[in-house]
Length: 248
Image 1 (cartoon, rainbow, N blue to C red):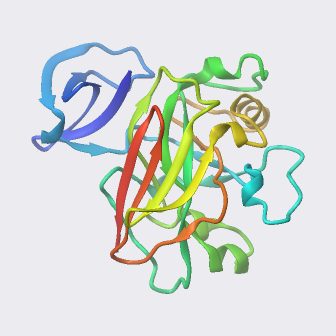
Image 2 (cartoon, rainbow, N blue to C red; image 1 turned 180 degrees about the vertical axis):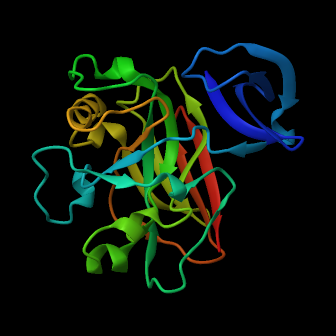
């Protein structure tokens, strides 16, 4: 199923996408919900970030092609992206004028569906709601020069996700392509992850409780492409969809 959060007629709601129709539901799909009876054409609504996470974590150095001669991490290495950096499909990524290099990172994002505290690897996937596309926008000069990554990874609009959450796919073998102005900038498959999703969830949940709606960006591949004002950025994941944002 494809779960969305959208705006129509000045109101915000949740829905299920079936073909070109959005069936409105009473709440996010990871909670008990009912259909309201209202429907909308998909083209008539504005899609928003499909969930509102309390927190977002992102995996550093989780693809061998992104290591650039650095050693592979022995354990998952997540960092935080704060919720105010969230953006949705069609939203503008705002490029800070005082950063010299901002990159787009194409990633599969895991959306948590059930509270996870100290879960085992074997049980980790029972706590997943679904998957969406994500862009871990990164100011490289700040990432290299600052003591922490607070602004390099969490400036406003630096965490676009969408267009929806897909619940019925196997995340272990999905193709990911990043494009800038229609030209491929990244290509990989989720099977290339150094630390897979069950191990990542189990590791994080031993220290930080994951709550419904929380998001985990699972890492990026290769060398990410630089984005500038006026660019159009796409993240396409097989079985999920395409997240499109412009830059200004």
